[in-house]
Image (cartoon, rainbow, N blue to C red; front, side, top):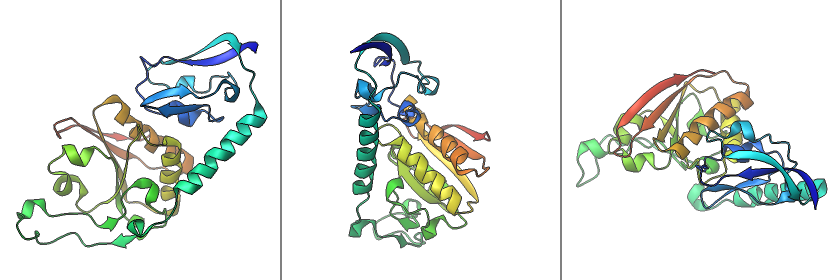
Length: 242
């Protein structure tokens, strides 16, 4: 043990947005049960790169007795994280890419206003290839996965005429999401990007993901940021052009 700087996370303030996870180059922070946690003192170098990325001021650095930073252990930990990411990218028949025509007529027993506007499969962000045909010259929706459940008119109001990528900015790995969206931007010439999320604080992490991905891709691209309330009503739309 040594007296040194170490990161402290106030779980009462943490909203689980995951921005600190992305900011920590050593992989010392993970989202566990919806809260950011320092998973090991030996992975934390105490420099506090994560501080400026926390929107809730839930992270501080204090000097106290702690295990010394272990560079070799950290390198092994990062390598294991990459291995787990690769293993999670396994292929199965259910994620085979498919192009589909939105339904012009409603299925039997359904009224016309509920017909599907989905144009491709899969839709989960981490299952989509950056080179998938659905991203070619398209208007892309980056959507928090709770949105379609809240919005009764999601298909007709937002999805129609768009490709879609779906994810949860709170429970999933925001770093992987940033990498994937950046890769999509690099590989394609999108006509537009629209980010749609719920009004709850953790869901705004999707806006952060879009901003970071655009910065990382080097592609100059404004995007529409749409906020939906818990009853499915669009309460705010703004153009973000960093």
